[in-house]
Image 1: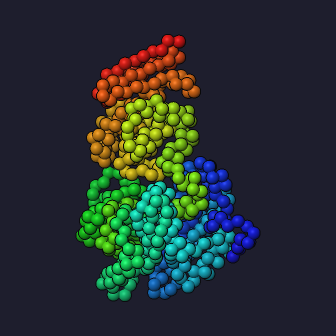
Image 2 (image 1 turned 45 degrees about the vertical axis):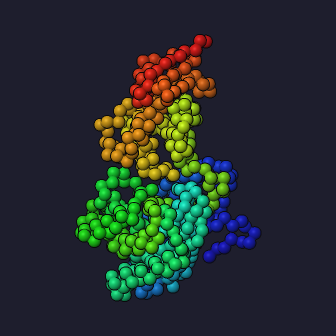
Image 3 (image 1 turned 90 degrees about the horizontal axis):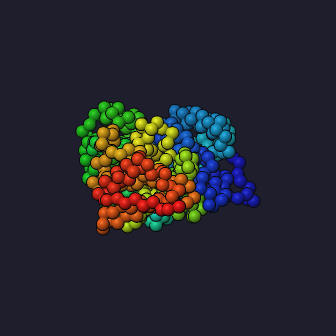
Length: 514
Protein backbone atom coordinates (compact mmCIF):
# COMPACT_ATOMS: atom_id res chain seq x y z
CA UNK A 1 0.00 0.00 0.00
CA UNK A 2 1.05 3.59 -0.57
CA UNK A 3 2.57 5.31 2.42
CA UNK A 4 3.16 8.95 3.22
CA UNK A 5 6.78 9.95 2.94
CA UNK A 6 8.67 11.11 6.01
CA UNK A 7 8.67 14.67 4.68
CA UNK A 8 4.89 14.92 4.24
CA UNK A 9 2.73 16.20 7.09
CA UNK A 10 0.74 13.55 8.94
CA UNK A 11 -2.93 14.50 8.98
CA UNK A 12 -3.93 11.12 10.36
CA UNK A 13 -6.35 8.93 8.43
CA UNK A 14 -7.69 11.88 6.43
CA UNK A 15 -4.38 12.34 4.59
CA UNK A 16 -5.10 16.05 4.45
CA UNK A 17 -5.69 18.87 6.89
CA UNK A 18 -9.42 19.42 7.31
CA UNK A 19 -9.25 22.76 9.07
CA UNK A 20 -6.53 24.88 7.50
CA UNK A 21 -8.03 27.95 9.13
CA UNK A 22 -8.61 27.26 12.85
CA UNK A 23 -11.35 29.90 12.88
CA UNK A 24 -13.25 28.43 9.92
CA UNK A 25 -16.91 27.89 10.80
CA UNK A 26 -17.94 25.83 7.77
CA UNK A 27 -16.81 22.36 6.81
CA UNK A 28 -15.70 21.42 3.33
CA UNK A 29 -17.42 18.17 2.42
CA UNK A 30 -15.71 15.17 4.08
CA UNK A 31 -16.36 11.46 3.47
CA UNK A 32 -15.74 8.74 6.07
CA UNK A 33 -16.19 4.98 5.70
CA UNK A 34 -16.55 2.84 8.83
CA UNK A 35 -15.92 -0.88 8.23
CA UNK A 36 -17.31 -2.62 11.28
CA UNK A 37 -17.92 -6.21 12.23
CA UNK A 38 -21.62 -5.97 11.41
CA UNK A 39 -22.00 -3.08 8.97
CA UNK A 40 -20.13 -0.97 6.44
CA UNK A 41 -21.20 2.66 6.31
CA UNK A 42 -20.37 5.77 4.29
CA UNK A 43 -21.06 9.15 5.84
CA UNK A 44 -20.41 12.42 4.03
CA UNK A 45 -20.32 15.39 6.41
CA UNK A 46 -21.13 18.94 5.44
CA UNK A 47 -22.38 22.14 7.06
CA UNK A 48 -21.21 23.74 10.29
CA UNK A 49 -17.76 22.45 11.20
CA UNK A 50 -18.49 22.17 14.93
CA UNK A 51 -21.81 20.38 14.35
CA UNK A 52 -21.64 18.71 10.94
CA UNK A 53 -24.75 17.52 9.11
CA UNK A 54 -25.07 14.32 7.12
CA UNK A 55 -24.97 15.13 3.43
CA UNK A 56 -24.98 11.40 2.66
CA UNK A 57 -25.43 8.43 4.99
CA UNK A 58 -25.72 4.84 3.81
CA UNK A 59 -25.20 1.55 5.62
CA UNK A 60 -24.91 -2.01 4.34
CA UNK A 61 -25.27 -4.89 6.82
CA UNK A 62 -22.37 -7.16 5.79
CA UNK A 63 -21.65 -9.16 8.98
CA UNK A 64 -17.93 -9.41 8.24
CA UNK A 65 -17.43 -10.70 11.77
CA UNK A 66 -19.99 -13.52 11.60
CA UNK A 67 -18.29 -16.80 12.52
CA UNK A 68 -14.98 -15.05 13.26
CA UNK A 69 -14.63 -16.70 16.68
CA UNK A 70 -14.85 -20.16 15.10
CA UNK A 71 -13.00 -19.70 11.80
CA UNK A 72 -10.58 -16.87 12.60
CA UNK A 73 -11.46 -15.40 9.21
CA UNK A 74 -13.84 -12.83 7.78
CA UNK A 75 -17.21 -14.17 6.78
CA UNK A 76 -16.91 -14.93 3.07
CA UNK A 77 -20.39 -13.80 2.11
CA UNK A 78 -19.86 -10.67 4.23
CA UNK A 79 -16.57 -10.04 2.50
CA UNK A 80 -18.24 -10.13 -0.92
CA UNK A 81 -20.98 -7.77 0.26
CA UNK A 82 -18.44 -5.42 1.86
CA UNK A 83 -16.38 -5.23 -1.34
CA UNK A 84 -19.53 -4.46 -3.34
CA UNK A 85 -20.51 -1.74 -0.86
CA UNK A 86 -17.03 -0.19 -0.93
CA UNK A 87 -17.02 -0.10 -4.73
CA UNK A 88 -20.36 1.69 -4.62
CA UNK A 89 -19.19 4.14 -1.98
CA UNK A 90 -16.05 5.02 -3.93
CA UNK A 91 -18.11 5.61 -7.06
CA UNK A 92 -20.51 7.86 -5.13
CA UNK A 93 -17.59 9.82 -3.66
CA UNK A 94 -16.16 10.39 -7.12
CA UNK A 95 -19.55 11.45 -8.44
CA UNK A 96 -20.04 14.15 -5.80
CA UNK A 97 -16.49 15.41 -6.11
CA UNK A 98 -14.96 14.38 -2.80
CA UNK A 99 -11.18 14.90 -2.87
CA UNK A 100 -10.63 11.63 -1.02
CA UNK A 101 -12.25 9.18 1.37
CA UNK A 102 -11.14 8.10 4.81
CA UNK A 103 -11.79 4.45 5.65
CA UNK A 104 -11.37 2.92 9.09
CA UNK A 105 -11.76 -0.76 9.95
CA UNK A 106 -12.30 -2.08 13.45
CA UNK A 107 -12.52 -5.43 15.27
CA UNK A 108 -13.40 -7.91 12.51
CA UNK A 109 -10.69 -6.78 10.09
CA UNK A 110 -8.03 -6.33 12.77
CA UNK A 111 -8.67 -9.78 14.29
CA UNK A 112 -9.22 -11.88 11.17
CA UNK A 113 -6.25 -13.75 9.76
CA UNK A 114 -7.32 -12.65 6.28
CA UNK A 115 -7.87 -9.04 7.35
CA UNK A 116 -4.62 -7.83 5.69
CA UNK A 117 -5.55 -9.53 2.40
CA UNK A 118 -8.97 -7.85 2.53
CA UNK A 119 -7.33 -4.45 3.01
CA UNK A 120 -4.99 -5.13 0.07
CA UNK A 121 -7.82 -6.32 -2.17
CA UNK A 122 -9.88 -3.21 -1.44
CA UNK A 123 -6.92 -0.97 -2.28
CA UNK A 124 -6.15 -2.82 -5.52
CA UNK A 125 -9.76 -2.62 -6.69
CA UNK A 126 -10.70 0.87 -5.51
CA UNK A 127 -7.45 2.67 -4.48
CA UNK A 128 -9.11 3.16 -1.09
CA UNK A 129 -6.71 3.05 1.86
CA UNK A 130 -8.15 1.34 4.91
CA UNK A 131 -6.74 2.31 8.31
CA UNK A 132 -7.11 -0.58 10.73
CA UNK A 133 -7.35 0.74 14.30
CA UNK A 134 -6.76 -1.22 17.48
CA UNK A 135 -9.25 -1.49 20.33
CA UNK A 136 -7.99 1.38 22.53
CA UNK A 137 -7.83 3.68 19.50
CA UNK A 138 -11.36 2.70 18.51
CA UNK A 139 -12.47 3.51 22.06
CA UNK A 140 -10.76 6.90 21.92
CA UNK A 141 -12.31 7.87 18.59
CA UNK A 142 -15.78 6.79 19.73
CA UNK A 143 -15.40 8.83 22.92
CA UNK A 144 -14.38 11.86 20.87
CA UNK A 145 -17.52 11.38 18.80
CA UNK A 146 -19.51 11.71 22.02
CA UNK A 147 -17.58 14.88 22.84
CA UNK A 148 -18.59 16.30 19.46
CA UNK A 149 -22.20 16.22 20.61
CA UNK A 150 -21.69 16.82 24.34
CA UNK A 151 -18.89 19.38 24.85
CA UNK A 152 -17.23 19.10 28.24
CA UNK A 153 -19.23 16.01 29.14
CA UNK A 154 -18.21 13.38 31.66
CA UNK A 155 -18.91 9.70 32.16
CA UNK A 156 -18.27 6.32 30.59
CA UNK A 157 -18.57 5.76 26.83
CA UNK A 158 -19.52 2.24 25.83
CA UNK A 159 -19.23 1.46 22.12
CA UNK A 160 -20.54 -1.95 21.07
CA UNK A 161 -19.85 -3.43 17.66
CA UNK A 162 -20.40 -6.87 16.27
CA UNK A 163 -17.11 -8.38 17.45
CA UNK A 164 -15.95 -6.14 20.30
CA UNK A 165 -17.01 -3.64 22.93
CA UNK A 166 -14.92 -0.65 23.97
CA UNK A 167 -15.04 1.47 27.12
CA UNK A 168 -13.58 4.95 27.56
CA UNK A 169 -13.70 7.54 30.31
CA UNK A 170 -14.44 11.15 29.41
CA UNK A 171 -14.11 14.13 31.71
CA UNK A 172 -13.93 17.88 31.06
CA UNK A 173 -13.79 17.35 27.33
CA UNK A 174 -10.90 14.87 27.48
CA UNK A 175 -10.67 11.11 26.92
CA UNK A 176 -9.09 9.15 29.78
CA UNK A 177 -8.66 5.43 30.38
CA UNK A 178 -9.66 3.13 27.51
CA UNK A 179 -10.28 -0.61 27.34
CA UNK A 180 -11.38 -3.08 24.68
CA UNK A 181 -13.10 -6.42 25.14
CA UNK A 182 -14.46 -9.32 23.01
CA UNK A 183 -18.06 -8.62 24.09
CA UNK A 184 -19.45 -8.30 20.59
CA UNK A 185 -22.88 -9.94 20.12
CA UNK A 186 -21.91 -11.25 16.69
CA UNK A 187 -18.94 -13.01 18.28
CA UNK A 188 -21.01 -14.42 21.16
CA UNK A 189 -23.99 -15.66 19.18
CA UNK A 190 -22.45 -19.09 18.52
CA UNK A 191 -20.33 -19.36 21.66
CA UNK A 192 -19.88 -22.83 23.09
CA UNK A 193 -22.46 -23.68 25.73
CA UNK A 194 -25.33 -21.69 24.27
CA UNK A 195 -27.09 -19.19 26.56
CA UNK A 196 -25.34 -20.57 29.64
CA UNK A 197 -21.96 -20.17 27.95
CA UNK A 198 -22.86 -16.64 26.85
CA UNK A 199 -23.88 -15.67 30.37
CA UNK A 200 -20.69 -17.07 31.90
CA UNK A 201 -18.47 -15.30 29.36
CA UNK A 202 -20.31 -12.00 29.76
CA UNK A 203 -20.10 -12.22 33.55
CA UNK A 204 -16.38 -12.98 33.62
CA UNK A 205 -15.48 -10.32 31.05
CA UNK A 206 -17.54 -7.59 32.71
CA UNK A 207 -16.07 -8.41 36.12
CA UNK A 208 -12.59 -7.95 34.65
CA UNK A 209 -13.57 -4.67 32.97
CA UNK A 210 -15.06 -3.34 36.21
CA UNK A 211 -11.89 -4.19 38.11
CA UNK A 212 -9.68 -2.48 35.54
CA UNK A 213 -11.87 0.60 34.92
CA UNK A 214 -12.72 1.26 38.55
CA UNK A 215 -15.86 3.14 39.70
CA UNK A 216 -17.84 4.82 36.91
CA UNK A 217 -20.99 6.21 38.47
CA UNK A 218 -21.49 9.19 36.15
CA UNK A 219 -23.44 9.13 32.89
CA UNK A 220 -23.22 6.08 30.64
CA UNK A 221 -23.06 7.00 26.94
CA UNK A 222 -24.16 4.22 24.59
CA UNK A 223 -22.65 4.11 21.09
CA UNK A 224 -23.43 1.42 18.53
CA UNK A 225 -26.24 -0.16 16.53
CA UNK A 226 -27.19 -2.80 19.09
CA UNK A 227 -27.64 -0.15 21.78
CA UNK A 228 -29.76 1.96 19.42
CA UNK A 229 -31.94 -1.07 18.68
CA UNK A 230 -32.51 -1.55 22.41
CA UNK A 231 -33.35 2.14 22.76
CA UNK A 232 -35.94 1.88 19.98
CA UNK A 233 -37.54 -1.05 21.78
CA UNK A 234 -37.52 0.98 25.01
CA UNK A 235 -39.22 3.89 23.21
CA UNK A 236 -41.84 1.52 21.88
CA UNK A 237 -42.46 -0.04 25.28
CA UNK A 238 -42.82 3.34 26.98
CA UNK A 239 -44.86 4.94 24.20
CA UNK A 240 -42.26 7.69 24.08
CA UNK A 241 -43.45 10.48 21.75
CA UNK A 242 -40.20 11.85 20.26
CA UNK A 243 -38.54 9.31 17.99
CA UNK A 244 -35.09 10.89 17.95
CA UNK A 245 -32.31 8.53 18.96
CA UNK A 246 -29.55 11.00 19.85
CA UNK A 247 -29.75 12.10 23.51
CA UNK A 248 -32.51 9.61 24.32
CA UNK A 249 -32.33 8.96 28.06
CA UNK A 250 -32.98 5.76 30.00
CA UNK A 251 -32.58 4.64 33.59
CA UNK A 252 -31.42 1.34 35.03
CA UNK A 253 -35.05 0.57 35.79
CA UNK A 254 -36.00 1.24 32.16
CA UNK A 255 -33.35 -1.23 30.99
CA UNK A 256 -34.58 -3.94 33.36
CA UNK A 257 -38.18 -3.44 32.18
CA UNK A 258 -37.13 -3.51 28.54
CA UNK A 259 -35.09 -6.67 29.10
CA UNK A 260 -38.17 -8.35 30.54
CA UNK A 261 -40.25 -6.98 27.65
CA UNK A 262 -37.83 -8.51 25.13
CA UNK A 263 -37.98 -11.87 26.94
CA UNK A 264 -41.77 -11.98 26.73
CA UNK A 265 -42.28 -10.58 23.20
CA UNK A 266 -42.51 -12.31 19.88
CA UNK A 267 -39.23 -10.95 18.51
CA UNK A 268 -40.23 -11.19 14.87
CA UNK A 269 -43.46 -9.30 15.51
CA UNK A 270 -41.58 -6.70 17.57
CA UNK A 271 -38.92 -6.37 14.86
CA UNK A 272 -41.53 -5.70 12.20
CA UNK A 273 -43.34 -3.18 14.39
CA UNK A 274 -40.31 -1.02 15.15
CA UNK A 275 -38.53 -1.75 11.84
CA UNK A 276 -35.24 -3.26 12.92
CA UNK A 277 -33.38 -5.43 10.40
CA UNK A 278 -33.43 -9.20 11.07
CA UNK A 279 -29.64 -9.31 11.42
CA UNK A 280 -29.72 -6.54 14.04
CA UNK A 281 -32.67 -8.03 15.92
CA UNK A 282 -30.85 -11.36 16.20
CA UNK A 283 -28.17 -9.63 18.32
CA UNK A 284 -30.54 -7.78 20.65
CA UNK A 285 -31.10 -10.59 23.22
CA UNK A 286 -27.34 -10.88 23.74
CA UNK A 287 -26.78 -7.11 23.75
CA UNK A 288 -29.43 -6.52 26.42
CA UNK A 289 -27.75 -9.07 28.70
CA UNK A 290 -24.43 -7.24 28.26
CA UNK A 291 -26.08 -3.89 29.00
CA UNK A 292 -27.76 -5.22 32.14
CA UNK A 293 -24.36 -6.44 33.32
CA UNK A 294 -22.70 -3.09 32.64
CA UNK A 295 -25.36 -1.24 34.61
CA UNK A 296 -25.16 -3.71 37.49
CA UNK A 297 -21.40 -3.22 37.83
CA UNK A 298 -20.94 0.48 37.09
CA UNK A 299 -24.27 1.85 38.40
CA UNK A 300 -24.44 4.99 36.18
CA UNK A 301 -26.67 7.80 37.42
CA UNK A 302 -28.30 7.96 33.98
CA UNK A 303 -27.95 6.52 30.48
CA UNK A 304 -27.82 8.48 27.22
CA UNK A 305 -27.82 7.18 23.65
CA UNK A 306 -25.31 8.80 21.30
CA UNK A 307 -25.78 8.70 17.54
CA UNK A 308 -22.24 10.07 17.31
CA UNK A 309 -19.37 7.61 17.39
CA UNK A 310 -16.15 6.74 15.65
CA UNK A 311 -16.94 8.63 12.43
CA UNK A 312 -17.69 11.86 14.27
CA UNK A 313 -14.72 11.21 16.54
CA UNK A 314 -12.43 11.26 13.53
CA UNK A 315 -13.67 14.75 12.69
CA UNK A 316 -13.26 15.87 16.29
CA UNK A 317 -9.68 14.56 16.20
CA UNK A 318 -8.84 17.04 13.45
CA UNK A 319 -10.49 20.07 15.07
CA UNK A 320 -8.32 22.76 16.64
CA UNK A 321 -9.18 23.55 20.24
CA UNK A 322 -10.71 26.90 19.29
CA UNK A 323 -13.31 25.00 17.30
CA UNK A 324 -13.88 22.30 19.93
CA UNK A 325 -14.70 25.03 22.44
CA UNK A 326 -17.60 26.36 20.38
CA UNK A 327 -21.19 25.46 21.17
CA UNK A 328 -22.39 22.95 18.52
CA UNK A 329 -25.99 24.15 18.81
CA UNK A 330 -25.17 27.80 18.21
CA UNK A 331 -22.77 26.95 15.40
CA UNK A 332 -25.49 24.89 13.67
CA UNK A 333 -27.97 27.73 14.03
CA UNK A 334 -25.54 30.33 12.67
CA UNK A 335 -24.92 28.07 9.67
CA UNK A 336 -28.65 27.55 9.08
CA UNK A 337 -29.31 31.30 9.29
CA UNK A 338 -26.53 32.14 6.82
CA UNK A 339 -27.78 29.48 4.41
CA UNK A 340 -31.56 29.80 4.65
CA UNK A 341 -32.76 33.01 6.32
CA UNK A 342 -34.09 35.92 4.28
CA UNK A 343 -31.95 38.40 6.25
CA UNK A 344 -28.82 36.61 7.51
CA UNK A 345 -27.55 38.37 10.62
CA UNK A 346 -30.98 39.60 11.69
CA UNK A 347 -31.24 36.85 14.30
CA UNK A 348 -28.75 38.53 16.62
CA UNK A 349 -30.56 41.88 16.29
CA UNK A 350 -33.79 40.12 17.14
CA UNK A 351 -32.04 38.55 20.13
CA UNK A 352 -31.04 42.00 21.36
CA UNK A 353 -34.62 43.24 20.98
CA UNK A 354 -36.20 40.45 23.05
CA UNK A 355 -33.37 40.12 25.61
CA UNK A 356 -35.04 42.37 28.27
CA UNK A 357 -37.56 39.55 28.75
CA UNK A 358 -34.82 37.03 29.52
CA UNK A 359 -32.29 38.83 31.70
CA UNK A 360 -32.16 36.44 34.64
CA UNK A 361 -32.29 33.01 33.00
CA UNK A 362 -29.67 30.29 33.42
CA UNK A 363 -27.02 29.67 30.72
CA UNK A 364 -28.75 26.54 29.40
CA UNK A 365 -31.95 28.45 28.73
CA UNK A 366 -30.04 31.48 27.40
CA UNK A 367 -28.47 29.40 24.62
CA UNK A 368 -31.93 28.17 23.60
CA UNK A 369 -33.17 31.75 23.39
CA UNK A 370 -30.25 32.64 21.15
CA UNK A 371 -30.73 29.52 19.03
CA UNK A 372 -34.41 30.35 18.53
CA UNK A 373 -33.60 33.86 17.31
CA UNK A 374 -31.08 32.50 14.81
CA UNK A 375 -33.60 29.95 13.50
CA UNK A 376 -36.68 32.14 13.57
CA UNK A 377 -36.75 32.68 9.79
CA UNK A 378 -35.00 29.66 8.26
CA UNK A 379 -38.31 28.04 7.24
CA UNK A 380 -39.70 31.02 5.34
CA UNK A 381 -39.86 29.04 2.08
CA UNK A 382 -42.59 26.82 3.51
CA UNK A 383 -46.19 27.72 2.72
CA UNK A 384 -47.43 30.29 5.27
CA UNK A 385 -50.11 27.87 6.48
CA UNK A 386 -47.46 25.33 7.44
CA UNK A 387 -44.48 27.41 8.59
CA UNK A 388 -45.25 26.84 12.28
CA UNK A 389 -45.27 23.08 11.79
CA UNK A 390 -42.14 23.13 9.64
CA UNK A 391 -40.31 25.14 12.31
CA UNK A 392 -41.32 22.69 15.01
CA UNK A 393 -40.25 19.73 12.89
CA UNK A 394 -36.92 21.40 12.18
CA UNK A 395 -36.09 21.94 15.82
CA UNK A 396 -37.16 18.49 16.97
CA UNK A 397 -35.80 16.45 14.05
CA UNK A 398 -32.83 18.37 12.62
CA UNK A 399 -29.21 17.45 13.20
CA UNK A 400 -28.63 19.95 16.00
CA UNK A 401 -25.89 18.99 18.44
CA UNK A 402 -25.90 19.69 22.15
CA UNK A 403 -29.68 19.40 22.61
CA UNK A 404 -31.56 17.19 25.02
CA UNK A 405 -35.02 16.00 24.04
CA UNK A 406 -36.88 18.44 26.26
CA UNK A 407 -34.69 21.26 24.90
CA UNK A 408 -35.61 20.21 21.35
CA UNK A 409 -39.30 20.44 22.20
CA UNK A 410 -38.83 23.79 23.98
CA UNK A 411 -37.03 25.21 20.94
CA UNK A 412 -39.64 23.75 18.60
CA UNK A 413 -42.53 25.18 20.61
CA UNK A 414 -40.92 28.63 20.68
CA UNK A 415 -40.50 28.56 16.90
CA UNK A 416 -44.06 27.32 16.48
CA UNK A 417 -45.27 30.40 18.39
CA UNK A 418 -43.10 32.56 16.14
CA UNK A 419 -45.60 31.79 13.37
CA UNK A 420 -48.71 30.74 15.26
CA UNK A 421 -50.49 32.39 18.16
CA UNK A 422 -51.76 29.17 19.74
CA UNK A 423 -50.26 25.71 20.02
CA UNK A 424 -53.61 23.98 20.53
CA UNK A 425 -54.84 21.78 17.72
CA UNK A 426 -51.44 20.89 16.28
CA UNK A 427 -50.30 17.34 15.70
CA UNK A 428 -47.42 17.88 18.14
CA UNK A 429 -49.40 18.13 21.36
CA UNK A 430 -48.21 14.70 22.50
CA UNK A 431 -44.64 16.01 22.51
CA UNK A 432 -45.52 18.92 24.77
CA UNK A 433 -45.75 16.41 27.62
CA UNK A 434 -41.94 16.46 27.71
CA UNK A 435 -42.11 20.04 29.02
CA UNK A 436 -43.30 21.40 32.35
CA UNK A 437 -46.10 23.97 32.38
CA UNK A 438 -43.55 26.67 33.19
CA UNK A 439 -41.37 25.66 30.24
CA UNK A 440 -44.35 25.72 27.90
CA UNK A 441 -45.25 29.23 29.02
CA UNK A 442 -41.68 30.48 28.60
CA UNK A 443 -41.50 28.97 25.11
CA UNK A 444 -44.75 30.77 24.27
CA UNK A 445 -43.35 34.10 25.50
CA UNK A 446 -40.15 33.58 23.51
CA UNK A 447 -42.05 32.74 20.33
CA UNK A 448 -44.45 35.65 20.64
CA UNK A 449 -41.59 38.07 21.37
CA UNK A 450 -39.86 36.94 18.17
CA UNK A 451 -43.18 37.21 16.32
CA UNK A 452 -43.43 40.87 17.37
CA UNK A 453 -39.78 41.74 16.85
CA UNK A 454 -39.74 40.37 13.31
CA UNK A 455 -42.11 43.19 12.28
CA UNK A 456 -40.33 46.18 13.79
CA UNK A 457 -37.09 46.76 11.93
CA UNK A 458 -37.01 49.50 9.33
CA UNK A 459 -33.24 49.92 9.25
CA UNK A 460 -31.37 46.76 10.23
CA UNK A 461 -28.34 48.81 11.29
CA UNK A 462 -30.23 51.00 13.78
CA UNK A 463 -32.06 50.26 17.00
CA UNK A 464 -35.51 51.37 15.82
CA UNK A 465 -37.49 49.45 18.42
CA UNK A 466 -36.81 48.64 22.05
CA UNK A 467 -38.61 46.55 24.68
CA UNK A 468 -38.62 47.23 28.41
CA UNK A 469 -40.00 44.72 30.87
CA UNK A 470 -40.73 45.06 34.58
CA UNK A 471 -41.45 41.63 36.02
CA UNK A 472 -42.34 43.18 39.36
CA UNK A 473 -44.89 45.60 37.92
CA UNK A 474 -45.92 43.26 35.10
CA UNK A 475 -45.41 46.13 32.70
CA UNK A 476 -44.27 45.76 29.09
CA UNK A 477 -43.18 48.89 27.21
CA UNK A 478 -42.36 49.27 23.54
CA UNK A 479 -40.43 52.31 22.33
CA UNK A 480 -40.27 53.13 18.62
CA UNK A 481 -38.28 55.75 16.75
CA UNK A 482 -40.06 58.06 14.36
CA UNK A 483 -38.59 56.06 11.50
CA UNK A 484 -40.12 52.84 12.85
CA UNK A 485 -43.50 54.19 13.93
CA UNK A 486 -45.19 53.40 10.56
CA UNK A 487 -44.37 49.73 11.18
CA UNK A 488 -46.59 49.62 14.25
CA UNK A 489 -49.88 48.92 12.52
CA UNK A 490 -52.81 46.73 13.48
CA UNK A 491 -50.97 43.42 13.11
CA UNK A 492 -47.97 44.57 15.15
CA UNK A 493 -50.28 45.94 17.84
CA UNK A 494 -52.14 42.62 17.98
CA UNK A 495 -48.83 40.79 18.37
CA UNK A 496 -47.78 43.10 21.20
CA UNK A 497 -51.05 42.42 23.00
CA UNK A 498 -50.64 38.69 22.48
CA UNK A 499 -47.17 38.84 24.04
CA UNK A 500 -48.52 40.90 26.93
CA UNK A 501 -51.29 38.39 27.50
CA UNK A 502 -48.72 35.57 27.69
CA UNK A 503 -46.84 37.62 30.29
CA UNK A 504 -50.05 38.65 32.10
CA UNK A 505 -48.84 42.24 31.67
CA UNK A 506 -50.07 45.71 30.82
CA UNK A 507 -48.57 47.55 27.85
CA UNK A 508 -47.26 50.99 27.00
CA UNK A 509 -46.19 52.22 23.58
CA UNK A 510 -43.90 55.24 23.20
CA UNK A 511 -43.21 56.98 19.88
CA UNK A 512 -40.11 59.12 19.75
CA UNK A 513 -40.33 62.39 17.86
CA UNK A 514 -38.21 62.83 14.76
